[in-house]
Length: 273
Length: 227
Image (cartoon, rainbow over all chains, first blue to last red):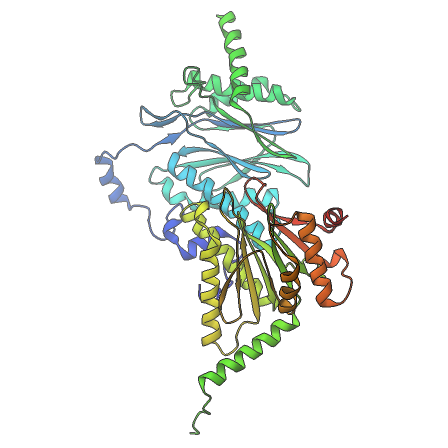
């Protein structure tokens, strides 16, 4: 640290890009997207498969937003992990859920967490909900070179906007495009199946228990239809993760509560069959 | 060409030290004190938004006395250093010791190489957890670093504060109430006036908090604690 020049602004991401470009996801300046001939050539090679995380979702309810994700990680047609967490608490009022290549996903969550905390400490105030969502968009955009190498990372940002006194959901595309969702959203390999379930069961201002049930049901249905999505693992006691993003902060829903929701759900299914 | 005027290194250092001391003496003082749940920091600061005390990392706080623009730059650099280290390695690898060393290096280099030394004194505190002791480091304008126990003070009236506190801070770390009362009494004794609660900036590194240990104690809460 020579004379501490202050030309980095308040963004940790920008600071990292200047100081340690090798540590920035998307390999700012270090890893270039391969040229077309190199791409053609690489198709002949069989690279080891990359770990992927799958279905995550968010839906609004009375008190805020439920954000949930399954626990399965896959490598090609193999199951790579049964306990992967894809829903991350970022700060007191934000969480993100990520689908895509597991390594870069976890890295992006960690960097986003540091980014928001860094801003808060330097500026003395937190970023606004909108500001946080925009910043995440820039990080997704920075990852674009990696997308061409097959390392897709797509998040859902969920934040409680204290000024508006409501929970908000933002979805992204690989170019960093940011779109606000009014009710619910789901991404990942089972995203479409989860959305179908939520479309049937979602109503505005659901109570907490009911919203949690709809979210978990959507994941359950996604797991039935999609090979990449894991359902509740009753044998090992592994359940999807769920968090509640509310004005009072972020609460992890305990495994026991999720287990009870699934027990009731499966009982119901048995009667229907 | 006229020969450059010769000044002996001793003379130059002495002049710089005097210059820096003069600058710091104009500033108000800050006390850091160990209490039963961590470290309490109290600053004589009439501004409610220009902070002298702030959070660096999970269990580390910073405070600076002297020239605001200079210690503000040091504060930002410290946050960048800590966040980069925590991101590269792990959150538990960010330590006050390494941060204080960084400050000592930077401030020391500026003191010896630049024309104008920094007119600042810095305090880095870390709350210990799970049997680890608290750490408090005071870094002087010339980069010299002091490892302190129990309590320490920086700023214009630091020496008088240390004398006052030495007589009164005895034995085991006091409760929050006792520590705050003692800090306020010390600041009042060196300024020879009654300080309004609004004129104090109070913050604590509280080991009972989950995650980030730093918290500001607003005037209303300070008043409650003192009551």
